[in-house]
Image 1 (cartoon, rainbow, N blue to C red):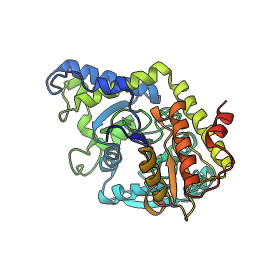
Image 2: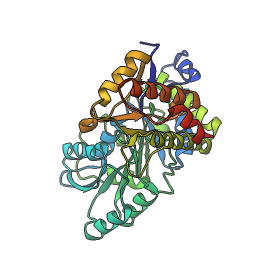
Image 3: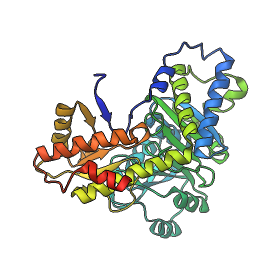
Image 4: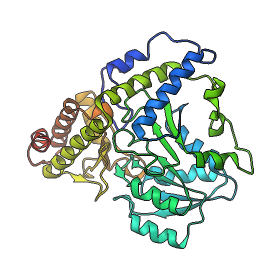
Length: 380
């Protein structure tokens, strides 16, 4: 199990110094105030990376926890919530909103491109009575990237709170929480941050806090209640026992990013992704998206006679390598290349493209040239 090569769009490869950090001797996070300081310092590193002065929390749970917690904390029965839908996870916010009593209104577009901001603006001119809106930065099943720098300020123009799922984009794509007027930004440890799975990153604005504080009804549940974090640092007390080893590991992963420099990290992702897309197109592969390509995930349409599941099985059986298909209706149609975090390294993408090239040809696909050679031409 430990010898497999993993090249999925999260969880990603974890650098050795991050793995080692998770194994060091720990203290009791419930009573050791030094750990409270360590935790807050880790949150501050995250704040610097995503460009915010808002409070940042690290929650004990995979990224989905943050999505549900945001909806649970903001939603009251009968609230009208705008769900911006151009992907499977975008539409998926409906479940979290409705389970807490919210009334979902969709702004839906094709899953093959980014949200058209002009169309969204025309929609909002006619209907803007929403408590908050949900938007996915990069929708992982297809890799579509939405322009938060335009979408979130537009929503705020109509006094709509903004809830952003940036789990698959954070660190791999530019993210300026304060400049882009994002009230709640959500990330996960296992994607481009390249730490182990199990942690959610949440940034929350003062306006979102006030909305939660001024609710007429109590929040349903405890674990998905963001208000339980209010004042934790001043009290030097966490609302539940923190996964200290995971947080130490995350802290080291953030050090790696800060050492490289966030702009350099983003540029590394862009360079890898751009060369990958260009090589695939010249090779003869069909990209799923028409525009809105993210720099963390590339989705390729696999011919029906080959099948995405059959292709990934072939790669697993012959290369001991796990590469992902997609979700829902795309599970046997799309192959996803997760060039994010530590996966977005030259030596890793070269190996994957070589395995993909050989496997496609073994299964009857006649590519034009050699994928690795094509990649190298565009990368250089």
